[in-house]
Amino acid sequence: MTLARLHQAKADRQPIAMLTAYEAGLARTAAAAGVDAFLVGDSLGMVVQGQRDTLGVTVDEVAYHAAMVRRGAGDVPVIADMPFLSDATVERALDAAGVLMGEGGADMVKLEGGAEKAEIVRVLAENGVPVCGHVGLLPQRVRKLGGYRVQGRGEDGARRIIEDAQALVAAGVDLLVVECVPHALGRALAEAVEVPVIGIGAGADTDGQVLVMHDMLGLTERTPRFVRNFMDGAASIQGAFEAYVDAVRTRRFPTEEESF
Ligand code: KIV
Image 1 (cartoon, rainbow, N blue to C red):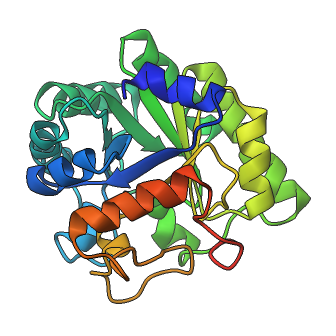
Image 2 (image 1 turned 90 degrees about the horizontal axis):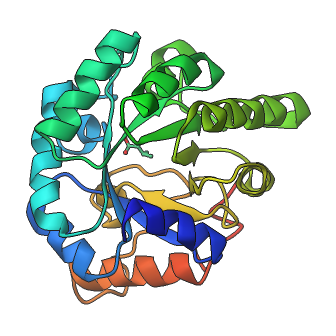
């Protein structure tokens, strides 16, 4: 899949199966299982480095892991996260994107935030950087939010997230991730914007799903309700990846019980 094919998948109503990845071997195995895109998430701070949240991750660390994923991913697109505050100003965002795409080999960068990030997205896009937005729950703001909570409940909350997404699309994002919102808002968001909307904890009616690889392989001690352990009943890690791709493509993941 190229980035253009992610857009075609939305047009064809073919759900996109995305996974996080942090190294070459598992990226190669997941690519062989049919995963459509990889996210080198700053979740690496928690699942690889053992930190309590994602805030300590640096641009160089994401680039280091992205370069490994790039080598294993073949022609599967690789999206790299802009770590905490690396996108706080236009200048910092341009520098970070240069490292993530240049040294990390990423095809696209992802940044967290809504309309307040529109100007930064616009400058990145104008300079040839494909950008993925991230709305809903923003893990980089967890210390300000005081915890990981479902976002966009109620009419006002839902409207704010849709308006944020529309502002990001108008500014030039090519893809959106929406995290931890009610099922109905995930669906409304996918209908409201022309770019593919990839959900995590956002119900089955977004244009695709993303999970943290360590979570869906059952390696994480405590997981939220929207995570399924795909190692259950799988004979191998590749089998678990195949089960995930199949469950996403057939919209058998997530179920209502796995949604908000
Ligand atoms: O860092 C990450 O893995 C992410 C996903 C949770 C979407 O941003």
